[in-house]
Picture 1 (spheres, rainbow, N blue to C red):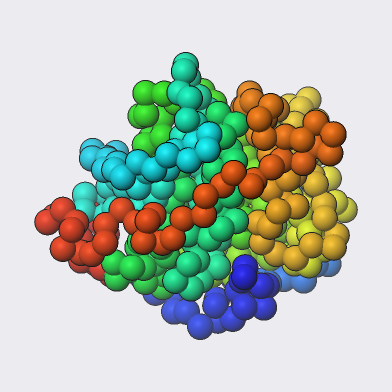
Picture 2 (picture 1 turned 180 degrees about the vertical axis):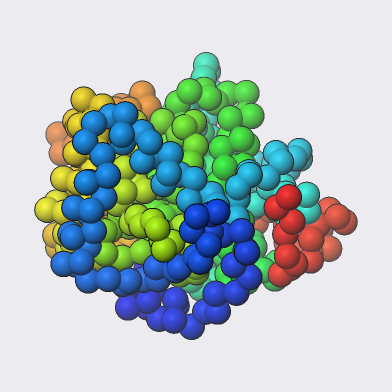
Length: 397
């Protein structure tokens, strides 16, 4: 089951926010602050949105504001300047053939000795160039959580059947990362995951069958946070669909989302809705529900982001699908909202997947694999000898 709002808030309260880098502020903002979970009320969020909108009245002023927000994400997370792009040294093996798609176990080094583990889904027919889609996952835990979950496999396999090359990858302390001894409460979780997503872009663009100009990303919950952070930081993302996570009053219930001062200093403030707006004018889909902190999206976050898209004359490029009777997660109805968005903006072919009468995207061809089938390495002994020991601090300079 997906981690529900209360559980994710409890996750936040139980973790220690340690090792925030001393450089997390800026020269004029020396004392970093953390906006954790429900940092302020829904009413306060609306007031904050009004303050954020007052910082710009035209495209030029917004672009200046946009750069300020982007820079604080980097500075606050300790990623300014960005780390060196060291060799990825990709490892891809164990190809499995299914109906209309293939799956392989894949890993690369985001930093020397620090591996990102995942699965690579590809169309069975690989003629010409294909869009690439990154699929970060949320905080659903357990031995079959993370990228092992059936909803994640369904999403990736169906996108691959429509012609996308899809990389589904672990957050730190989930999936293979957990199996090999890493914990999600690693004090560098936010910068490591954000840097891993940037390197996942490098990885998927390096594949010869991928069109580097057609890259999308979609994830829910904590994967939704990674979706809008990556899109804000990297213009190579052309299409983004953060699911059940873009909220003006909720800042993320885990240290990997709000454990670093990316939202606030004494002289600066932002929220996740404004960070998501950094996608403008690229296509952006907000999927929201009535059962979590995205319940106000149609009235609050969506109009706010539309205003920013309007600075570019691109208001129709941001879309909201609101499901008032749904709860948190990336269940079937949320995936059904995402598929046509990716088809439209990445040029996928849904002929073999979409029912022409009902419009429903058929996922029944997905073969749900076991975690053991999906793993890249079965044990630490199977890893390269230079791999960092689990829990080791990772050098980002």
